[in-house]
Image (cartoon, rainbow, N blue to C red; front, top):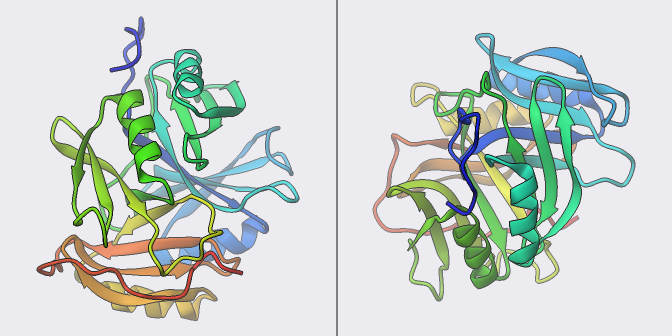
Length: 281
């Protein structure tokens, strides 16, 4: 790893997504939508860093699955994965050394460790989190975080930044030309993915993360897409089959884009849907 040893071992290895967070305009609207779609329940904490001093912890069966907060006027909206680091101070040095830029912090949060916001070497926003020993974040079960893609125009810069920062392995899933889609791995296990945006995105689409949520096979992605519409959301990309499972890209009532995936429905070969740019207003 790029970081030195920690006196207090982190419950989450470096380079692992350890939290997801939604910046929204109307928190009540977002809570209703995701509560109806995923069965989440919420507890609210005070947070002076948010625009209204409130931060909602979403939970499934009482275990935290992510956070929601009202963003300040003009601040970016949408879902953001947070990546674990053993020391935010050391991570800050490495981020800048590798061509990134710190935009906030490191900032300690009472009982929740220390966070740092940055732009990576390809200009994508990213959050690094030094989590406390009692950290809880459930993933990999229906209605929780499944994974995330970094969508970028500069795959080389992204690969260099993250593989050097976390000592990720890198494996090309596509052909590297017509489809440049890479998985980043720790000990041969995929951790995150990087996609060079193709013709389905406009050239001025900024680099961004796409967060995925697991769907119960008994429920199915098609049903979830229909339910999203019923609750005021949008189907950005209709359900389709991939080698990773059947998936669909959706947007909540405020336009925050996310993906849902049923890993039991895998297809041979690879093909990304040709659709309009989901980030083109």
